[in-house]
Each structure stands twice: as C-alpha cells, then as structure tokens.
Length: 390
Image (cartoon, rainbow, N blue to C red; front, side, top):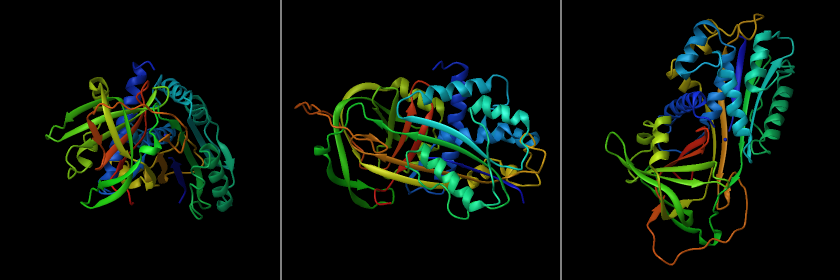
C-alpha cells in the first residue's frame, strides 16, 4: 500500500484574514475537543495552529471527495482564490515575532513525479519546496527528518520519529514545526516560589512548586451555558503581542472537558473584549508537558476516514504516478513554563510588591492554558493541566 505520512509539532488586519484564522482556530479546537474525550484526567499539550497548517498542506493536494471532506471538516479551503495570500500573510506576521519560528517542509520520494501545480501551491502558500529523499533506506530517512526537526526547534524535539516509523512504501512526509520561546513581560520572582498543594482532576492532592506574582492583569469571570462558573486571566509575554490565557473552573471537581467542549474563536474573542485590568496576586504551578498524540482517531470521528483509505483517498493534485492515502497524523509538543517565561527561557529581574493586600487567584486545581498571538488571533499552543505528577 502506498501511503502519505504526515508529522508535525509541537507553538493584523482582522478582515478576511481574521475569518481565515478564526476558521483555522475553530478546526484546531474541534480536534483538541476530540482528543480530550479520551484523556479526561490527564495532561495534554497541543498546537491548534500546527494542526490546521499541516492539514491545509494535505488539502492542497486533495481532489474530488477527499477535497470536499477536508473543506467541510476544516471550514476553509486554501484552494480557493485569495486564500494562499492570506495564509502567507498570517505566517509572515507570526514569523516576524521574536522567539517564534514556523517552518513547513515536504519530504518526497525522489522517483515520484509531483504535479507542477502542487509544487507551485506549496511555494505560493507555505514558501517551501519539496526535498527529495530515498525512502528505500527508511532508517536513513528517519535520521534526516529527525535532524531537520531538531534544527528547527533548537533541539527541543531531538527525535520526532522512532526507528521503524517509515518504510519503503513511504512516498511523502509533510512537516510543520512551530518553535516558541518567550519571556514573561513581568517575570515571577523565583524566591517567592513555594511548595503548595494541587487538587488533581482525579480527586487526589499532590505537592507542586507554585510561582507567585502580584501585578495588574487582564481578568474576567464567566459562566458557561450550563451554569459553570470559571475565570480567565491573561499573562502577557514581553512585547505584549503574545500572551498565555489561563482558564479554570471555580470548583475543582468540574472537569476541564466542560470548558474545552465549549471553546471556539468567538468565545476567545469575547474573553479578550470583556477582560478588565485589575490588580491581582497570581499563584500558578511551574510545569513542563511533553505530549505525543496520534490524531488519526480524532480525524476519523470528524468524518475524514476516506483520506486514510487507499481505495477512497484522492490526492491526484499531488501526483498521478501512484494512488496515495494518509497513513498517520502525529503531533509532538513540548511546553515548559517557569518563572522567566515559556520554553526554558531565563532572565533576572526585580519585582516590586505592594504591602496592600490584593485578591489572590490560585491555580491549585486543573486549568486550561492557551498561548495566543493577539494581533492575528492565532492559537499557537494550548493544553490541559490536570496532575503535576504525570
């Protein structure tokens, strides 16, 4: 069987581009919602932007029923006129940010003849050209791809593929890498980090190192349609163009799936418009997450089973040489949050504290985190934190 492997990691004018980015965010959030159904009580890190980007690359090569199914599930099509330009502009906006690197790649079997329009579409939309490889030597191909990913993630992901992940039936590997490293606008003082009790999703309690910062934050309290109260606090990164949103129900026994199932781009925009600047003391865990997920199951539930079947998949925009289908869609994400920032950055700073008591927000219970590029609305990373010991 001839297969296409898709691997990706783990990271404006809001007119037409805002519409495209909203649809990409909504698609990524739908996939995340499917994923957390199977991991309700566990930790998970995910890149909605990476997910939307890699499936958009596959969409460029799709035809017929496969293209229609992808468009229906994703809510947009980069084959439509004007969309490649919007995608290019979005990527340029994100890549212009200090500490953000976005790279797409296509590794193709050297004897496979690609359609010229597919090559042009890749270059026009994702600014990438196919790299020829010899998949008859699969272990060598694994090493080359792992080195490529490691180079573009500053060695944060040294090995994306395990030995045996590819074989001599591999014809294409789509890659999308998002590397993010940013300092907090106001760093947490390490001297104030203390061990405190965290109330896990499964009802147990465990000690965890909690960071503490008193400052002015954008903060709001909200209620779901089912009457679940939760709050949202925005923690900005240096430069204010990127921020982390921390979302947590008031009651620790409420599962995070109640909040994630209700998420969409409009809900996030509503948060951002209704948050108010207030002085608060934020206490949150220092944490590191490593997630590796196979997304095939989630995509099957979303009606995309046809593209995984050699008899029904139609990727004739890529090549007429052989029938192609998708075999795997994997995502690997590493997130590290500490006193200095995210992704292991470091800095030294003095933080002034008021002697006056201020309301405290303590994330000693499960919470969602979302890393957003505020100008475009792009959701680079998100996840759920349920247990410090996982």
